[in-house]
View 1 (cartoon, rainbow, N blue to C red):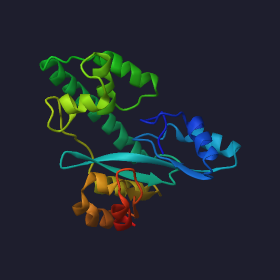
View 2: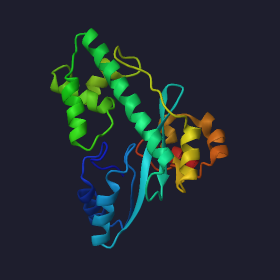
View 3: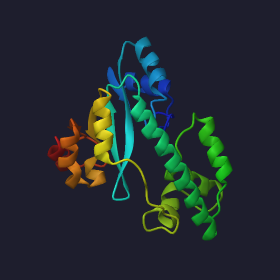
View 4: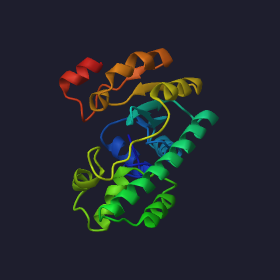
Amino acid sequence: MHTTASDGRSTPEELVKQAYDAGIRTMGVTDHDTMGGVARAAAAATELGMTLVPGIEITSVHGGKDVHVLAYFLPELSEALRDLLAEQRRNRLERARLIAERLAAVGAPIDMDALMQAGAALGGKSLARPQIAQALIAAGHAGSVAEAFEKYLSEDGPAYVPHRGASPSEVVDLIGQAGGVSSLAHPGYTKKDEIIPDLVAAGLTAIEAYHSSHDADMALRCA
């Protein structure tokens, strides 16, 4: 699950309480490219007698597109993973700047400074297209996140900029070196089955079966 440390809507404490109230007694926090919410979630879970699995959802890149790799049972990030995530943040910032330039060129400028300040205020969250979509809404160029993507930010949109970053195999290998358990996130959404053999060779230990983008057939296939 995700918290406000990345793109979640609940603070770590709120998320733990919601999980507890739903009858969950073991849960994982795997925010995008950060473990910033894990310590707070673990403390809240301990108070309620729950088990918190520490983790992270790391963004890798294959063919210019995101491939998310989940890492579980990581008490903390290894130096190599910290370096990788720092490089990702730099790449995301550069990508956001290029997207902003393209938005301005098509008559939909956004306040990039305000966007960066908001990220810093929230613990240095990485800039990604959902945050840029919110900036487009704030600037009056779109009425919703879906409209912002449709008009500007989708792969066919005028402001789209391809991703750069570490390969999925590299991320899986680094997770293994750090003592974590790796899982390919939402393969039914990513549609990159052709890379699975290479990921297994790199040490992939699981595939996410149950996800909101998976129907029953996809979940059964992944399981």
